[in-house]
Amino acid sequence: MHTFTVDYSTDRPDPRVLVNRSYFASSLPRLIPLCRIRGHKPVVDGYDSSYGNRERARWVACRRCGVRPEPQGHLDPDAWNIGQPYTGPFHPGQPTSETVRKELAARGLDEGIRQPGAWPPSPTGSLGAQLIIGRSPTYGAGFKVGNAGSEHVLAAHIGLGPIGALFLHTEQFGTVLQRRLNPTGYESRVVDVAFHHGSIWWSLWARRNEHRSSDPRWMNGSANIHPAHYLLGPRTNTVLDQTEKTAATVHMPDGTAYDVTVRLEKWQHGRRRGRKTTSWGLDWDCPAGIPVRNHSWKGDEALGGHLPFPDEAAGTPQWAEVACALIAESCARDRAHYNYRAPSAA
Ligand SMILES: [Zn+2]
Image (cartoon, rainbow, N blue to C red):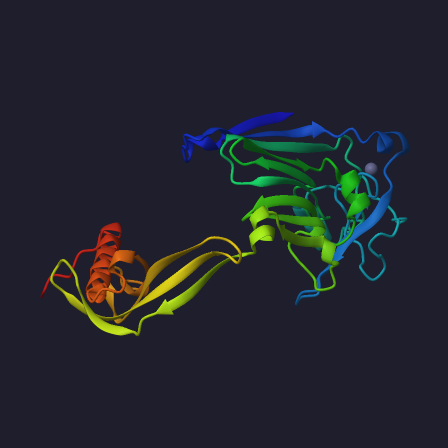
């Protein structure tokens, strides 16, 4: 057995995170009592790639515990179907090194070299965990049952927001479950419940990386769980009113000037049957761009954007001047952020 831990809290210290540490234990003996008593049940495993190269492969694994002989064998895909019991020969004495076996094959000494070798006498597995005490990014819980190609056979997590989170995974351990529940294909299955953005989100035995239109509706979904959503209606943001686009000039503190167009928008926020608030926003464009960075690729200039606009200045004759001052301030902050230096006049 080999164990070690990794302390992540030193990478990015966060006073709200008291512990953020991973624990690993590898080379743990797998018990697999049934296989030890009755012997392994060889079955053909492999894949048929549906991508460009149409690659296919077949090897041998134990139907019950997923352990593979060493070597696992290179069977003929035309002669063996995935999931079929393996009734062919084993070649236990052969070298397990791929290089040595290739060398032997190259010299024509390939008698039985494509057959599976001996079952490993003492198969092992690994366990891993990550513990966060303090602020964690998630609320929710779930587990994963891996596929035939997964490094992590089983995984589970629980996230409790400000309290912390725990993530667990196994390697090799749990192949009994994986082989029973998700034996073929290369899509892991997840059962997961998460809470964020005022909603509950669920996956029930859903493929982890792919959603198909044929999936039943219960497999993935979300529902708003904020009481106000049902009492007062969904939260909306709508533009009530807006000014014409108006030409103006932004004067940067360094004395340079840029032509812009500015427009104010009056926004209303709130729920359909609830209290509403309004705010003003500034929408601006500068086709020539106001330089804010010294690099030489795209994004060196601010070409426009949206800024909050003070209520008291909206509707006054000076609104466009206030808008230009806000744009200048915003660009000056960007310049400070990117450590911009104006090119010296040559
Ligand atoms: Zn077995």
